[in-house]
Image 1: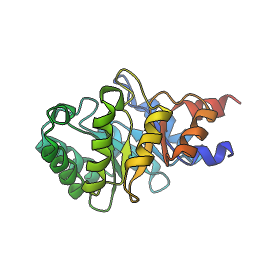
Image 2 (image 1 turned 135 degrees about the vertical axis):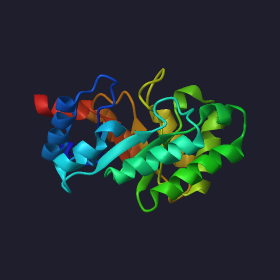
Image 3 (image 1 turned 90 degrees about the horizontal axis):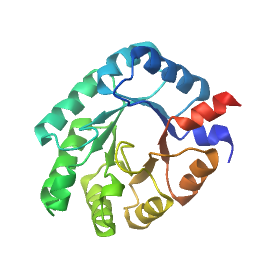
Length: 216
């Protein structure tokens, strides 16, 4: 698999709390140059980024990020606001506490509500695998499948660890045929990126691969 093929599956990401517009602009420029799948940026920059890239690049943003414990109503508002500002794709964090409480009806209701707000726009559901048991990960595969969301995503990159090969393999074995997989967090080489893709990931959330490509 070529670097170009791998980069075409990358959501080129900058979500640091300190991110300034000059840095967001730079990753937009890099995404355009290397033709990544999208730029994944904070909601506060979506409108400005959309104006900057026009229709030349997909703009992705995050909802309920990174902890996931905003109210359902807040997440729906965030989603609608992001789409109004020009976002193409939404990456939401589930309510992990509700999952731990086994309140599966609420978790499903939340994802469905955000997917409804997204309409035809892509919704990726971040489940933060490093905080979950294997049983909880399998449960989330089922709930994401039932919800109608487009992707299940491993991680925010802001918790104790990121994507693992084992988790992507587990997703591939347990999600429905219409659910795609995004591996995110800690992807630091093209070899790792290729391995995640071979295991079933359709998207990679990372900034490092573009940095590596630029350095060559």
